[in-house]
Image (cartoon, rainbow, N blue to C red):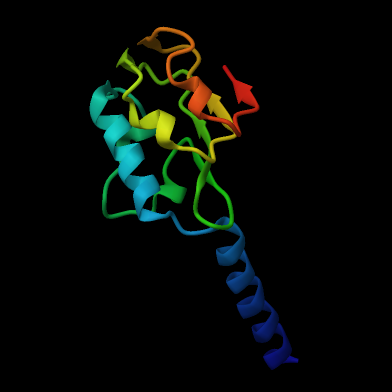
Length: 123
């Protein structure tokens, strides 16, 4: 009985890691680049964005099983700055949902949004 419970706990832990994915290094670099171009000092979600932690565990980030960023939710984070065509945001090609609502961001629409071919939600 004890071995059975231990086995299932280990199996569950292993599956949980596989489902969440580990951040791909180029995805992390793109997010860090985005963070450097924005004034995010007051953002609770972006506070823990750094090279030493897996970007799939960062606030506002959701990854798929392959470790690609599919959701970026930085709504209501007191972020300011400019997003232009060269922003690393537009290289997150697997992004499906983007929420930047209730911040002070400036950009020319459509800017580089045409590069985000998987985007199904934008706020």
